[in-house]
Image (cartoon, rainbow, N blue to C red; front, side, top):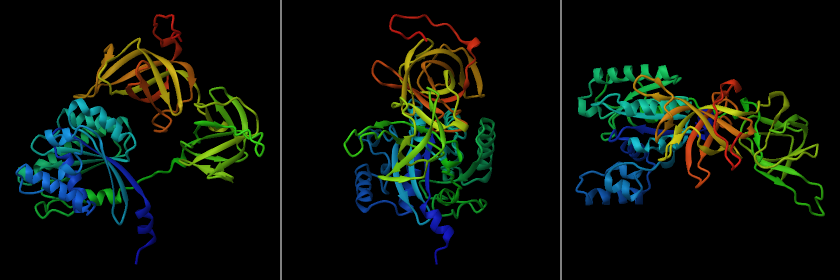
Length: 443
């Protein structure tokens, strides 16, 4: 008989990302996870077996289940972020298999930005290397709440407990210094299937969970309602029909918190106040709505509101600022330099901005800050100071991953330059000077 707890856990969703250096076995681990949990369709498995035979391999190369691009299969590496959905009797999963090459580290930012858990793989023969540190740093910066250290290829080191213990101790110390809240180390062999889905008979010294068991039981909190309410306006609805001549609604997805009819709200960045007169969800009026529902909000007062504005309860409305201090992961091939003119996209709002200062770049070897690097290049992690043309209502990323994050975009071609995590407002007396120009970029 199924218990209530099991029924509830089966409805939960865990988003997780895999990361690691080149040839650590990320795609093999994901393939083994899918295969051994019986989440692979027969035609997919047949295709993998056929390609493996063409390569002269005796057994199916399970990495091909996620290495979907032709270039990936030809080179035997992961390039793009491969998303896969699967489910067990206990939980549903969305996984992101991210690349291991240094030049594709930026793709881990994409895969881990919405993850509840990150699986960082380490080759037992190589231990913790610079790319391992980089992935741990990205997971910490993105505030991924759970990190699993999967020490892979244990079969190639004779399943020695001492090898695993040394790597686990080094990584745990490093990740803890970064501020990762929870670290679970698991010794595995993705190729042989040890401790991936089934417990390993070769490592009787290990008494912890398998990878799948941990994924099924790790506590996941999607309680966005515990955060202050934030409602970025995506679209203004004014049908102006005979049936609804005066209807004015503001449509969008609630980013966090709860909205209630009758609640006093503030519209940002204007600062105008009103009261929620009605909330429409799925064509019906409701008294309450919560994240991440998509709704239409109606206000009692006729206020000038447009896409990009933020509606929040007056009692917990965020402060607005034009000076943003943030940590960014640089994801573009072109450098980001002091004085660069960019677009800053925050929720549904996009504004012009100038990079006023790059105070430091993170050195991953010892977690020190390299001062005043002048620019950030692809895969760099650094602090930036950005001045925006219009005020923004940002939360601290530590308080909200949804409304504390933003993108820096090249205004010339729309290329994403960096993914940012906002901190506190930058003091006006610390601003640097950037030359004005005739294009109106002097803020």
